[in-house]
Every structure is written in C-alpha cells, then in structure tokens.
Image (cartoon, rainbow, N blue to C red; front, side, top):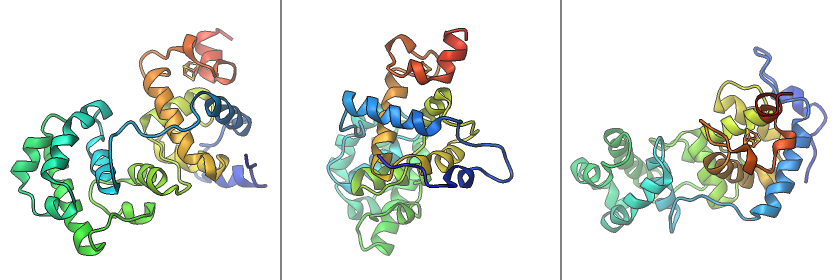
Length: 236
Ligand code: SF4
C-alpha cells in the first residue's frame, strides 16, 4: 500500500473552502483496504455486462435507478441493440419502450441514442478507453466515467456516487459537501492500485450495510474507526 506524499493533504484542500480530509483519514483508508481485502478481495460492479458497450449503457441507465432494475432491462435491450451501430440508428420510441421501467426514461432515451451516434462518428464505433474521453459522451458524467474506466481498463480513478459520499463522510474521511469534492479529497489518499476496489467496496457497503436511512452498524466491521458510530451510536 502506498503512502501520502509530503504535502498531498494540503493540496487536496480547496483554498476557498475548509473541505478537507479527516485528521486520520490515511490510517482509516489503510484499515478499510485491509478489512475489505480480506472480506471481498475482488469486488466489482453488480451491473451485468459482457463488453464495454454494455457497461456504458448499463451505467447510464443506472443513474437514479437500482442495479437490479437495470439488470432486468438490459437483456432485452442488448438483444434488440447489440452494439453502438444498432443503437445509433434506433428510433426514440423503440428505445423508450425498452427502458421505460427505469427512472428518467425520456432523458435516458435521448442520451443513449446521442451517445451511440457520437461513438460511431467521433470514436470509430469503439467505446473510449479512458475517463477523459468517456466524459465526452452524452449522459456520462465524471463519476460514471471513472467507474467505467476503472472497471474496464484499470485506470486509477475513483468514482464517487452518493453511497461513497455518504459512507466515507460517516467514517470521518472528509467533511466534503458533494461527491465531486469527496473525489478530489480522497483520490490522492488512496493508493492508485486500490481506487477501483475502494469504490466498489464502499458502494457495496453503502448498499447493504451502511444504508442511507438506517445504517446497520451491528453488522459493520468498521465501527472502531467510524465517526458516526462514535458520536451517534456509541454516545461518545
Ligand atoms: S459503523 Fe455504522 S455508520 Fe459507520 S460505516 Fe459502519 S454501518 Fe456505517
């Protein structure tokens, strides 16, 4: 596991705000990596996909929607639209019919077709293989681009969604107000080789244990390093 370079923490702190890493964030991150490496050495996305195109489509559909619902939608979608070329020629009505059970189907229909057209026109029909270019695709923001790039290509970038934001804040790793701030603060503190795993570990932990409304602290292996547990549950 790597260590923080001198000055890393201060560079992660915005000069305009006081958002920053917690005082012992580095030690806690080390502990989280050690713990989850033993419990779940190879974490990955719960979205079902067979190639980069399918992961990009599934990730776009998963915004504000559960992975379970997306996995119910995608088999029929990929049967009808097996690649970007088929999707680029799709009619909005047909796409909408296939994805209408997920959230924001109108916007996602538009984005999916635009995304396919852009990949065909500007990337030769090949899904971009890095986070920077993935962010140029309609409907793919920074978080999604980081998750796709790290999952598919091992790029050392951290994806921060609402689960990662919430869980890492409860643990006291930072005091950020947004996922973007969280990503900027935490990325330099997590060894590059662990950034992809860290994202998946924390997502899974947030989904099944450290739930938004009621965290299941009695099932958590991180109580001894958790600020929320210390202040809210343990009465300290
Ligand atoms: S102790 Fe509770 S609040 Fe803290 S990370 Fe675990 S489940 Fe979440």
